[in-house]
Amino acid sequence: MNKLEFNSLVIQHSDSLKSYARNFTRDNEDANDLVQETILKAITYFKNFREGTNLKGWLYTIMKNTFINNYRRTSKTNSLITKEEEISHANLVNSSSKNMGVNKFIMEDINIALGNLSKDYYTPFTMYFEGYKYHEISEELNIPIGTVKTRIHVARKAMKKTLSCYR
Image 1: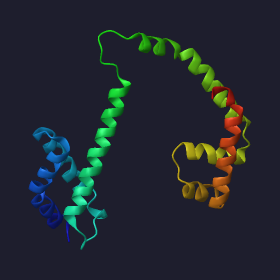
Image 2: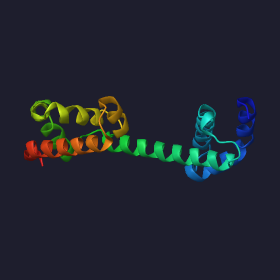
Image 3: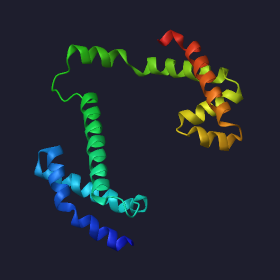
Image 4: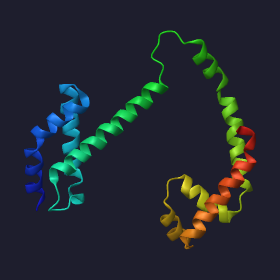
């Protein structure tokens, strides 16, 4: 199936996607946005669709995951941002106690703890922390994946021990 045929099949499912989206959002405008985002993702990730599988089910899965991710993002944003005119006592105490000076000392302690790690442990640990997967670290450093996992585990334990005062 070529991309043009795929796009037309996806568009044919837009009405059923819209009714499915209304179940999630309970709002027509939000449902339209969710359908558009779902169709955009489906067309963008056309290569991931295996011909012969259930297209409608694939689209519903994309929609469900998109809705859940958007909901989580919105919930997290709303919990972090105070939308009140006056700052409550609890928020005031929290903002005054979490100042940049304290953060600077904490970061210095973290950097010291990282500096205490040997290169064999430091490199895999920082790569993992930066988002590399175990197999990517293994390939990059040319060491077995089990060794990568062990070194990251040992580095974590050493960091926890060094930074135990922050528990």
